[in-house]
Image (cartoon, rainbow, N blue to C red):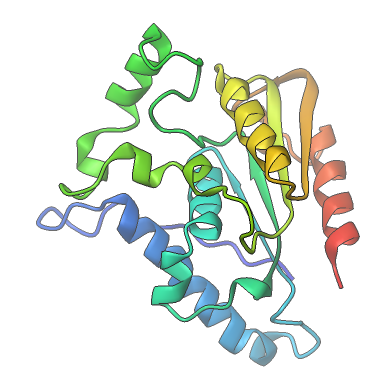
Length: 208
């Protein structure tokens, strides 16, 4: 059973939305799914949830899984997450498209995507970078990370993200979707590109 949730981009003019609001929205949705899914589908197992997201969505599902504070605040058990599928995501907000923080593309990214309006005043980009929460001896579910062949430079970030998982001995799979796949079409043409096959193979492999 698939559940599609769109996090809020704004609540209203008087209350700007930041990343905490977005991730809390996802946590609340997961709590509802776990508590009520059997009302909609009695055969569903609430302890076999897979998270998936594209681009900013991949960033958010990675953050909520790796930064335990969100699930702890909403009393949601991480053990209910069987796997995470992140497509063309952003995992290091300060330098996602090049190893150098001062690379031109990274500077443009920080201006356009990582506006200070997205973050509470007392927090930094580093605190919202999923890669910073990959540490040894933590409870982390398996990850499938996918990049498009032409991914606006974000494949650099994906490789670093995957390498840190591997350094800490966590289960991770990395796939580059070939052909003419771009940052947009890896999702918009999901039904016809190789991402679909990797997606469902990963789920079958990690279901109990």
